[in-house]
Length: 446
Image (cartoon, rainbow, N blue to C red):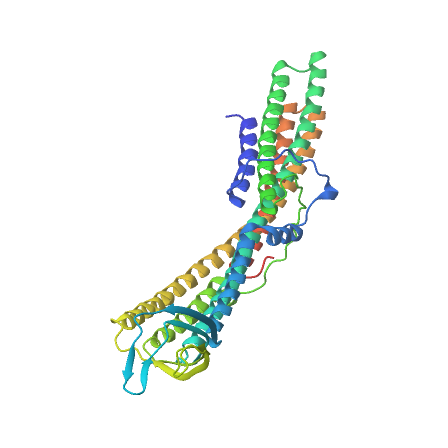
């Protein structure tokens, strides 16, 4: 394989590596980039828009409102229950008895009317209602932590897409510059051929280089359109073809490995959620223990009905006030097995928490290595670009002197373009890896 295809395939493969390493799950929509540089979007603006409008985040926010409703429902255990009732009944036969010399007496009327207002109030349930409220409050805290987790994931997805777009935009500019150089060389070599100073091979080889570069640019443009479509799906603005700024100057995190891990353990939402789940499991254990305890209630009923002697048809006011107690005697072993189930859940949460710690440790160390590697590559490719530019300058001098052919000069130019692309990739990787490390540490990206 000659140098042309070697360099060309290297540039294209580099572009594709960045595309697929930074972003998956892209969608095919939208047209080519048309916005001007003045219309370019900042990373902070894009993240803010995604966090405020994306359906996934909205769904997590709705879960908080649902949690508030459950807390209110749990608090209703402290409130009285008041209802009203009315009834009419016709009964027969009606019991009657006769006393000699006194007459016949009817014990109750055929038509019976009754209207009542009933009041019931919990007096004591051994903390069952209180624990229910605490459980729902704890569930809301978990929902809040889950919302933070969703926002963090959406922010990280946006960052990956943002830097993919930044790379593709700049890579296309590099390809455009290379095409301008190739077109200028083609005109120059065609002029030389017309005077007999160049061969058909040189002309055809230059045209092949142009065709290869145009093909690579087409792939980059197609990838850019896909990424723009993905960003539009994140922001919900499908009528735009966004252009993003190249925000590559991200400060490094100056901390040791141990302090990074401790910071991650304190700040990762997964650890916070596991802790709240453990608290919630403990509350459920307490609640389960109260299920076989008595419940004491106060009740009061007042109203009017007929059927009182001696005027059976006359409506009279009546009332009933009292205290009731419900004492479970045997629940078929339900409480026992419920307690065993909750204890098992607590043990599972302990194992889950340890697994989360190990995962966080791995993610932090991996993210650190990505940062270190990207920084080293940036320094390496910066030096390589300087050397490639110097070599190209020397190649131009040699070409003017007739020492090398235009194809060798174009190879030197391709090396410069390749070095620029690799330096851009390294800078993009470094910026993205910084955000990846921040995410691994639990630092908010939004």
